[in-house]
Length: 265
Image 1 (cartoon, helix red, strand yellow):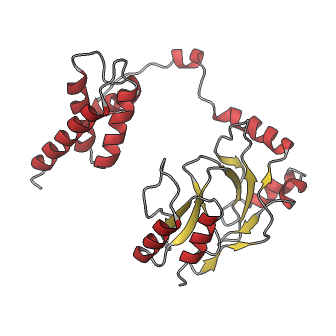
Image 2: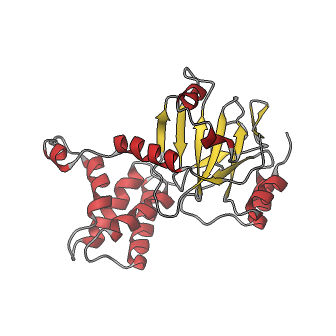
Image 3: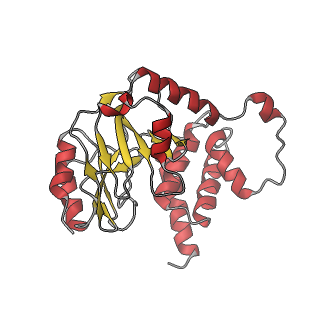
């Protein structure tokens, strides 16, 4: 397999946020969520470590209509049924390793594009800033991604944006009237951990203990320590009289050390 480092650097130099992806599956080889784009030098170092890596781009400033053709449903049938071929003819497009298509569009500055897996039968809308798409000349199972043109990423047509907005309505959670009829029973410690992320660490006086218990609960359940710390910071941000970041980190580090001792590491 070819080392794709020069292609990856070229994408970065054109303003894209690059992610190295496993060459055997579409799995990121680094933690990238909410992190700044890799610099060309960082990319070169990563490809020394992962010389067979494929390339993916974060969908930060663009979104992708991802047409799948190797499953039970041929997504191109859904595209044809829209009867708007002009939406897809004047923007950047690539063919995927399994003969699907990626159509690229600029995210509008004045609208939020909501990710929608199952946007149409056989078609996904990939738009979350922490999502990504694999790009040419990456390959999977010996089959390559290939750019079908070199057109700039076009603004999304107005009618396409209207369709996306209409389809996104089905993604919204139940309204308050529906939620009111939903009763919770059988709460456990795991559900309480999830709720702490939103509810915070409670009133002044018990916040440090609550933070310690939260960290301990996550670590006991094998949550990655770095992720546990980030979740603790999110929970702290939802605390009315929040702890300082230094206090959260000190408490978190103490619980990590305690968990290491518990495991006999």
